[in-house]
Image 1: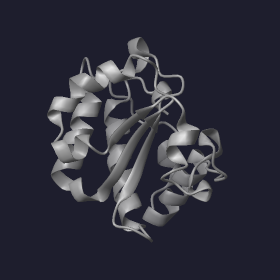
Image 2: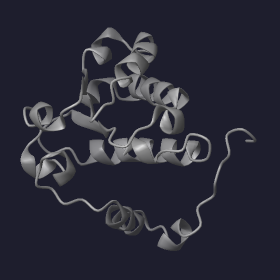
Image 3: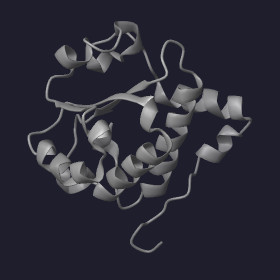
Length: 161
């Protein structure tokens, strides 16, 4: 959820997690060669959470390394001003990638056309039960990384790094 992001202290951790999540998603594709990315903007506050640097860098990474793997990108529960923010970012996108982006205020009607209910979390109208902390622990075990490393993760302050 974008509403939990603090661009001043969590930049590197968020970037690493996003890239890792892309990699895992691509490795586990079952029915297609493309993924559908859903960014839930519930609770997003442009003064607290907006991070154009993160968006720009993630989009550059996606365009450079995964362009054919993005089937669609949905920004859901978008506040009215998110479309304005997207206008700032859109020039950085290829026309092909920009055409895959949809910004929706109502996730239910938009997503049900593209995502099966069992693959969509309950908060967005699906039936999938997803616990982020459980997923992180599962990935720790799969990657043979001690979950204790997660207890006190390093904090990066972008202003001083």
